[in-house]
Image (cartoon, rainbow, N blue to C red; front, side, top):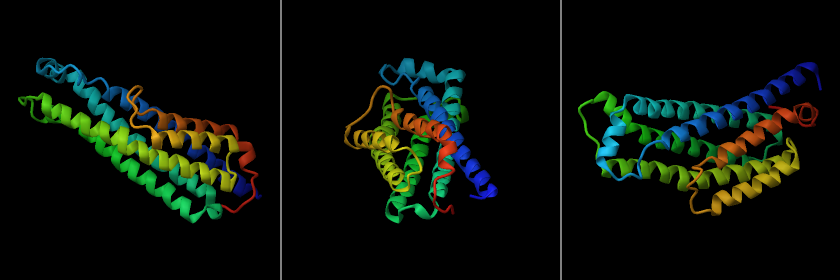
Length: 226
């Protein structure tokens, strides 16, 4: 492999790892910020007081911004991984890989916007009031996207990524087997309540750390790059 190709491959590996780590951190922090809403209280007074606090509203808006940045980082992660596969990629599995990632990112952004919408409404219309019904609907809608629909898309993404890992040998085989277990759990589990939705970010983090650790060996793996 020529020196230019080695440097290019190293940059590609490092970009994927950095993007994956950024996504994991940003996604978990945004989820934790969203979970601060006292939706279980059932008291309109509690909710009104909570949303009346400018710091609470600011945290939700920050969470939505972090969720948006996490989506960009995940998209970058997917793009770099797909580039690393190059001509070795399987067209069928790579289509599912890319499609499930795009669908999940779109769903993730909609969920983040739904949770932050009340805080944004309070900022735009300070005299507005919040009802338990509207809050329950928005949070329930967002959690349905993240914990039910999103969980299935995550499972499809992890399973296809694991299959591509085995076919291209761009990562250690144990990572693919671990991904199969994680992906099947994401497809079969009815819902994840606590901790909320962090299984997928943790998987991306493991893949990213493995990418950095195995950087020296993966650059010598035979096969053309796109």
